[in-house]
Length: 175
Image 1 (cartoon, helix red, strand yellow):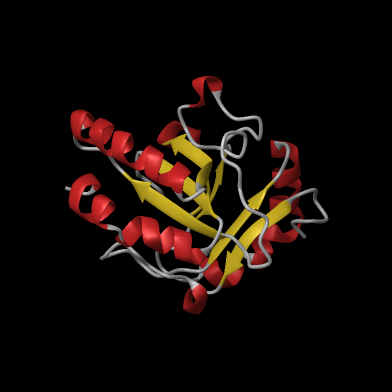
Image 2 (cartoon, rainbow, N blue to C red; image 1 turned 135 degrees about the vertical axis):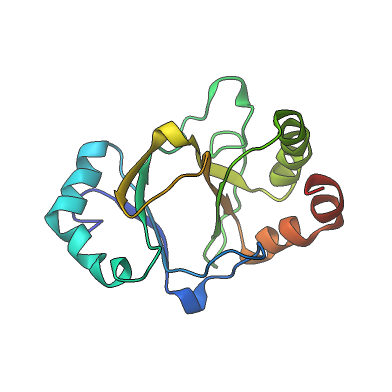
């Protein structure tokens, strides 16, 4: 249905195939798709996508959201690593996606965090496909109350794990 409505499926996984990196995060099925315009997404959701989501919707805490992605052409000043500014290798293995939802409690600390991780993403050829604030999140099912919704793409699951588990991220960025 996603492809028939003009979408591109970036990732789809059952909970058994999803790796939770952040302690305390809930394991869930994941479906990430991209449409060139909101009309295509709306056609998917009203044309049966919401019915396809029904089994997941029955799980307590499930949610479906629509978020405007990072433009394929990148963003002004290239602050964020995007497909326009990071050369992604063409590999025979599928890429990995990291989904982050959260809220900021200290602006100065998050600015330092961002300053540490942006070069790390570029080094590992990771980039953002979604980098949104809460006002950009449309809830299609369930509830969502975080301040940020972020999806990054990595050339391999190994590159994503290397980012997450490396000393610089664990010992400098997180604290």
